[in-house]
Structure formats: structure tokens, C-alpha cells
Length: 313
Length: 237
Image (cartoon, rainbow over all chains, first blue to last red; front, side):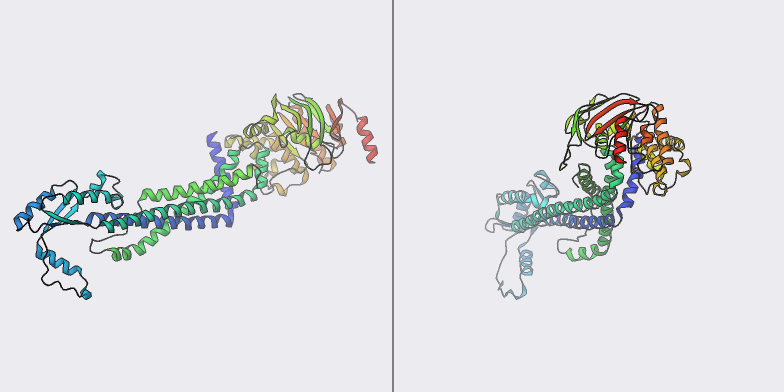
């Protein structure tokens, strides 16, 4: 009996798809457009998250050693070793005053007109957090987002080490990245919701037209005792095909865009913090796009069929 | 099998009720002819029986079940036990004769080969075996009505409801259709026919229920022409 119902579903489903015509085609294309926008934004967020993680794990806190108490390389090395032993520290690198001064000069704009003659720098220790240290506190993937507290705690711990005069860490920049990431997540969620709604409405209308085309057939099916499920199933299948078809097209377009643009974007974003590649979404998310497309199409179809069967058309 | 208790039906915006206090009991295997002039309530009565409408007052019972209290799935289940034939056939014109008839079996979830076997058998019985793969629109009126009867009979219904089944047919085609209905009756199907057709009224051993302005005015077995109907025909002439 199940096989017979599947057979009927398949045959009536094909009939529904055939009678869909142009509205069905446009529905697939609209779904594809919407899902492409979601996929593109997803790719941007996905890569920005990686970018933020790279930045957050690359930027070090800078400990300025107390010039009055730390004199000479041996004493500075002793402080560095103590810093290295702090929990959450990945790497502590000692920088001599000459090198620190050279870096400071390099960091100044050429036309700044500042007189740095006679300026001296103390011994400095660059402290990079341990990669994954943030995972001890919160979500690994959102290192930049959740690292703010962890970095604050690390900065305080560094400041408490004997021989450290001051600590500078780019908390403001990281907080900005964190905020930007949160905004992108929020905007992405809103856009995804909006596009999901559009896909549901579009596929609902396309299936509604199919229902109207097949109105007489449905009436006769009801007359001979067809259940609501028997009538609805082929139309739901049509909705699933529309949504999933849109998802597949969106992924194809995304793959094409990625092939064309990834190298250019990667080159533009690579810099002092290292090379950066624009990664495609992982296969599990590809599947999610297709399944979500199919699900939204089915939901749209269900709304139309429900309205028709309850006589609200 | 079918019982109506004080059934009334009022359509919105109608000048008068379609049915008024109808009490009727139809047993298994009966052949019932619903007679009466246009607007007497024959079609309304049939529509209540296949759950296309609900009674405004009173109760309609099918095999002991109150039709007003059925869920949608129970209504579908009742319809799978009832064959319905209309004056305008209600076939799907673009589908073949085979597909139109097989539809009634497919909704029951029968296996494909069972559907094929039973559909071909019933098409042979109604004399449409040679038209199996023709679209329904290509058939003559008589052939379309036979296809509609085949669709109703293929499920081996407990009850066959026919609303003016010969209304669009000439005398010869009407006779063929009447023969098919009588054959179904002989096989044990309860047949209820709403008609003006004198040939149907005088066909075989049947029970005639005459409706007038929504009321049952005559209900008795009959073998000849009914006096009440003769009066109507004379008025019409």
C-alpha cells in the first residue's frame, strides 16, 4: 500500500510540476536569488569570523617593563619567563629597547613631524594568548567575540607580575571587531528571516496557481474519497522541488562567484597579520541551504493547499 | 443503512428551504428513485448523502454514523464507499478514460497492477474497453456517462448515488445507462437515483420517493407509473 501511494505521489507530483509552468519557473528563480543572497552573506560572515579569530589570536598584549627595576637583559628575561608561565599565555617574546624604539618609529606616520630624537624605550615583552585559550571561557569559534573578557583578565594578570610597569593591549580594536561581527550576525539573521519569508510567499503563490489550474481534478479527487494527504502530497512535492531547486541553483551561483572572486578578495585582505583566504561554506551548510530551501518551499505549498482544502481561496 | 431524521436544508439567500422535515430510511440493496419536479430537493438530498453539504436541521446517518459529526478523514472514508454519478459526468477531460476511472482506486492506495486489472474489467463491463486510452473529452455524451459510471462502480461501492444520470442523453444511450444501474443493483449495490426520466421511473422493481417543495409526498414500492407523477407530467404537457 505504501509503495502504491508513493507511486501515485510520484505520478501526481509530476503532473503538479508540469502544470506549474511559468510561475513554477519564476518561483525557482526567485528562491534561487533569495538563497544566493543568504549563502553569500553566510560566506562573508563565515570568513569574517575566521578573520576575526586570526586577528584576535595574532595581536599580542604588550608589557612595558619597569625601567627602574628591570635593568639588563638577564632581568628582562626573568620577567619574560614569569609571563610565559601565566595561564592563557601562548608565547611571550622579549624585545630589546632598541628594537622597540625602531618599531615605534616605523609605526609613526612619515609626515607626523614628531621629534623622536633622545626618546628611549623600556624592555618590552609581547604576550600572545594561547590559541584556543578562549575556549576555556566560551565558544571557540567566536574567539574575537568572547575573547574580550579573557584578554582583560590576561592583561590584569600581566600587570600583576613583578617587574611590569604597564600593559597595552588593543582591547578597543578587538571590541570593535566583536561588535562588527555581532552586527553581521544580527543582520544575517534578519536577512535570512526576510528571505525565508519571501521564499515561502513566492512558492505559496506558485503552488496556489497550480492548485487553481488543477481545481477540477482536486474536486473530483475529493469526490471519490481522496484524503487531504493524498491531495496535498504532490503539491507539497512541487513546493519542495521549487525550494530545493532554488537552493541548488543558489549554490551553483555561489560556487561560480567564489571561483571568480576568492583569490582577489583573499589578496586584498591579506596583510601584516598573515595570508587570508576566502573559504567556501562547508558542505554541511550546502546541504542545509538545499534542505532549508526545500522546507520553505514545502511550507509555502502547505499554506496554499491548506487554504484551498479549507475553502478559503 | 441510510437514515434521515427530520432533515431540513436551507441554503443562504434561498427563497425557500430545499428540504423540509424529510424522514427516510433506505436499506441495503434497495433501488430508490427520487422523483419530483426541478427544485423539489432531489439533488440537495443526494448532496447530503455524499457529504457535499450538511443538513441545516435533523440528522443524516450512514451505517449508523451521523454525517454531521464526521472528521474530514472520515468523510473521505465514507466517500470511498459511495459511488457518485452526475448529469454532467464530472470527468477530467484531458485525462484518459483509464486514468479517470483508475483515480477512484488510486486514492484508496491500491497496488498498481490491482488498479489496472480492476479498471480494465469495469471498462469492459460498461463497454468502453476500446476507448481506454482516449481522452475523456473525445467521448460522446453516452460514453462519458458510462465512463463516469465505471468510475463509480470500480470501487465496488456499497451505495451508488446518481443525479440525473440520463439527463443529457438520448433515449438509446439512456437505456444503456439504466441497464448498467440495474446490473449494479442486481449485484447488491444500493442504488439511489434522482431523475425525471420516465424510463428510470418505470425500470425494474424499485422504490419511488417523490419530493415536492422539499417534502416527501410519496414513498412506496412501484411497478407502474405513479399517479402523482402522472399528474405532474400532465401539468407539464
